[in-house]
Structures are given as structure tokens and as C-alpha cells.
Amino acid sequence: MQVTARAAFTALLALAAGGAGCENPRLPTGPSELTSGIVVYEDANFRGQSAHITGDVRDLADVRGPCEHYDSDATGGRYYYDWNDCISSVRVAPGWRATLFRDDNFRDDSLEITADVANLQLERHDCPHDGLNDCVTSVRVRQQ
Image 1 (spheres, rainbow, N blue to C red):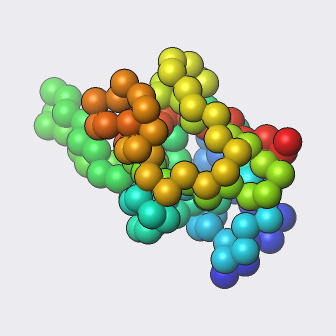
Image 2: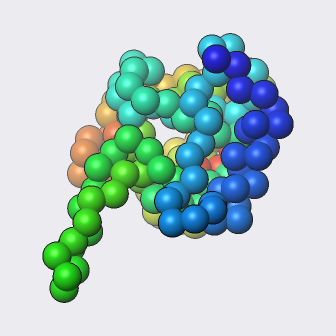
């Protein structure tokens, strides 16, 4: 499925506005032909669910995704799904680059990429999951 520029822009606007309703917004899935931005995947070797990102995302916890998390509180707790600490591989469109950060708001350790990364576990990093696998919380995406 090819994601149009308008659909990607609309998704980014919804993300920037904090989404509508109670549910976090979703990013469009990865296009079959990548011509802009990046595509993140939940599994290594570009497998699993994907999301197409063409602009900065300050906190991947604010974007509905495939990874399950549990938040406990005084009333019991709840399960929720997002892209925070959920990325294992990244495709990069020609002429684009991305910086992957361990913390929200583009903070903490980072990795800049200009080409596909099939397995973030193999990227040297101090993340407790090996490499930078499942440790990305914010992303900057730019044309070179």
C-alpha cells in the first residue's frame, strides 16, 4: 500500500496535536517503495509491524504501536500499546537520515543513521537489551 504525502502529513499533524480522543494516534504503515523518511519495524530484519515516519517524534509512547506495556497504579493498572522501546530495525529512504534517541524529547544517547539498519541489536550501545534494540524513545528525521 502506498501512503500518499497528504496521508503522511495528516498523520504527523494529528501526532503533533496530540491526536484525537482518548487513543494515541497511529503512524501510517511502511510504504512498499520508500521515497521519504524512514520505516521502523518491531522486529529485526525489517519484519513485524511497521510505521512510516517523515518528521520528528518527541515521544514514541504517544504513538499507538505494536508493543505491549503495563502501567500499574492504585486502582490496579492497564495495558497499553505504543512504539516506545519497540524498534528493532529501520529502513532509510535515499537522501534521508534519522537520529534515534534513548529518551524522549531527543535526549540521552543517540545513533545517527543514513542507511538501513537490519538489526539494532548489533549496533554498539549501552542499552540493556543489547545494542540499541528496543531502546528508542524519540526520533529525528531529516532530508540530507
